[in-house]
Image 1 (cartoon, rainbow, N blue to C red):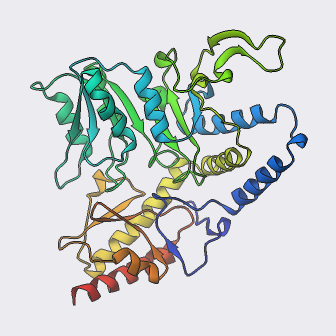
Image 2: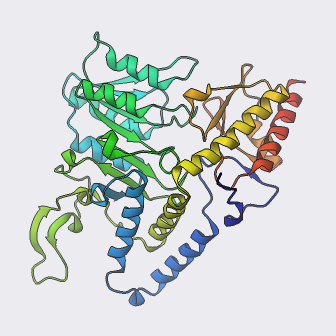
Image 3: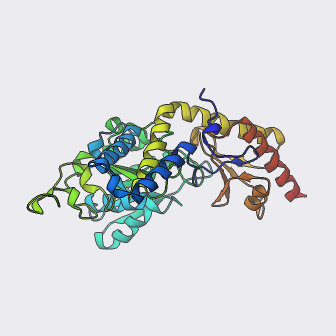
Length: 388
C-alpha cells in the first residue's frame, strides 16, 4: 500500500487536516515551482521562446492522462463553472426535454442549465435520493420514467460534494445512451482518485479543477470535450483558438477558422507562469502514485475513522460503504450537528468541513493513522461533552 506522503507537505505533526475536499495544501515541491514561476514573470525577457507552448502542453497532457484522454480533446480553463458554460453553449438541449441534476449538488453543474431552461424550452429536473444516499439508483429510476419528458442530458457530479455519495457512471451512462441522452461529469471529487477512462465510458464532457484532490492551485481546471462536440463555438474568442492569427506574421488575421480539436475551447489569458507549473506538478505527482494506490490508501484512512467511531459508540451515521466514495466519509447526526462543532475541532488542530448538516471528512496522502486516531478521539470527546 502507498505510504503516507506527509514529508512532502508543510503539515505540523499536531495538525490533523481532513479537508482536501474543500482545498488541499500544495506540496513543498510545488511551492518551489510557484516561486520559480513568479520569479520568471519578474524577468520576462529571460523567458525562452516557446516556453509558454511547452507549459501548456505539459499541463494539458498531464490532465488528459488522468482520464485516458488525448491531449487534443482537453482544453485549459479556469473553473468547473467555466467548463459547464462551455458545454451548455455547444450541447443543444432539445425543446421539451429534461436536464437531470442531483439534489443539492454543487452549484457548478447545475446553475447554467437553470439559466438556459426558460429560453431553451427545456426542464431542469432534480433527482433526489432517500436516506440511503444511493445516487445511482435514484438516477436510473429517473431516467427510466416514462411519464416525464425525455431526458436530454445528465449534468452531475460523479461524487456528491456534501455526502460523498458515489455515482456508478458505467450504469448511468448505459441508461443515458439507451435513450439518446448526453452526460456531463463534474469530476471535481473524482479526478486523480477514482479511475476514469473516457475512451471506454464515452461521456460528452468531463470537467475538473486542480485545487482539491489534485494538490494544485485555484484558477486552473480542464474540460474534456468529446470529438462530436468539438465543432462548437467556444465561450471566448482567442487568437490561439484559430488556425491563422499571429502577431509575428506579416498579416495578423490570416485564417479565422477554428482549430480542429478541443484546444479551441482554451480560456483567454491561459499563459500564467505560476499556476500552470504548480498545477502540472500536482497532477504529475498524483499520476506517479496512480489512482488505484491513492484510492486504496484513502479508503483505508476513512475506514479506520468509521471503525474507530463505531468502537467508541459515537452517535453518528455514515453512508453504506457501497454507496459512498472511498475517500470521503460523511457523518450524519441523528440529533443534529452540535453547534460550533467545526470551530471546536479546530481548537484541537483537527479540521473537517460542515456540509448541509453533515460532517465531511476528506483525507489525502499526507494523512496517516495517527491523524485518524486523533480525529476519532477528539470528535468522540467533543460529541460526548456536547450531549452532557
